[in-house]
Length: 244
Image (cartoon, rainbow, N blue to C red; front, top):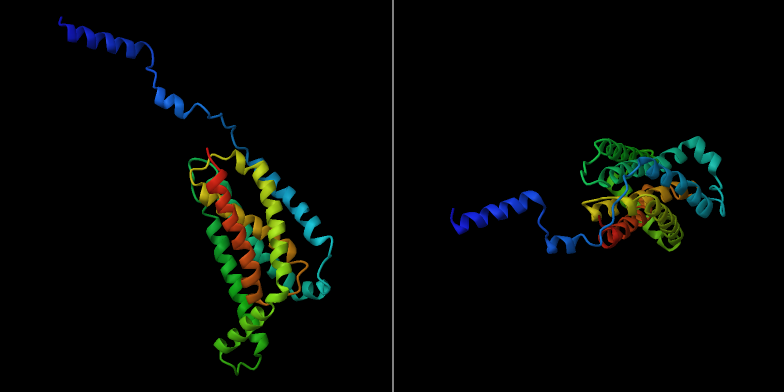
C-alpha cells in the first residue's frame, strides 16, 4: 500500500469516527439561541389583549359617535366596521402563515379581501345613488364631488389619522411582545408589513365606532392612509429587527 493510500484511509477513518470542525460555521452560529416552538394561542392572545387596550385608549375617552343609534339602524356601523374586520382578518391569517420557515400563504385571506372589495363597492354605489337620487348626474361627476368633499375635510382628519396610528402602535407592541419577536420568518419584511396592516385595521375598526365621517372617500383617504402608514412602519420593523 502506498503512502497516499494510507493517508486517504486515515482521513476517511477520522471523518467516519468524528465530525470535522469548521471554524467558519462555528463562528456563524456562535450567537444563535434556540427558538421555542410557536404556539398559535399566543397570537390569538395578542389579538384578544389588543382589542380592550385600543378600546380604552380610543373609544372610552370620547365615547361612541353621537348618532350611534341612528347609524346602527341604518347599518352604517356594520358596514363601516365590517370593512376593517375583513381587512384585519385577512392580514392576521397572513401573519400566522408567514411566521414560520415553511411560509404558505393562507388561502382564506383572499376571499376575505374579495369580500372587502365587494362591500366597499356596494357602499360606494349606494352613496352615489343617495347623492343623486334622480340619476341625472353622470356617475363620474358625482364621484368627483364626493372625493372633493372628503379632501376638503383634511384639516379635521388629523384626529382620525393620529388616533388610528396611536391605536395601531399599541396593538403592534402587543403583537410584538407575544408573537413577532418569537417568529422564525424567512420573509421578515412581508411579515412586518402585514402585521402593521393588521394592527392599523384593528385600530381603525375600533375608532370607526366613534367617527361620524361615513363618506367612502374619507375612509379611503384618511383611514386607508393611516393603515398604510402602519404597514410601512411594520415593514421597517421587520427588516431591521426580525431575524431567525
